[in-house]
Length: 80
Image (cartoon, rainbow, N blue to C red; front, side, top):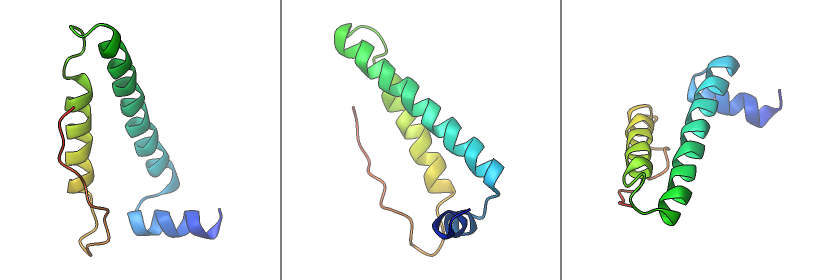
């Protein structure tokens, strides 16, 4: 594995497989939320809060696992 990849795994304190599983789960949730936004744009009565709930849940999860050293990116409060 390249140096930057290894460094990221060390900073995240995760093994490769655990990191991949988490990244795929988060990415999948974002894809579903994105699809819900597209459908919602066409049919406003559907998926009225799916993307917001998904992003808030992921935001909370990322905040809970943020490094204590303050190097985590700032997360934004929002409403879609």
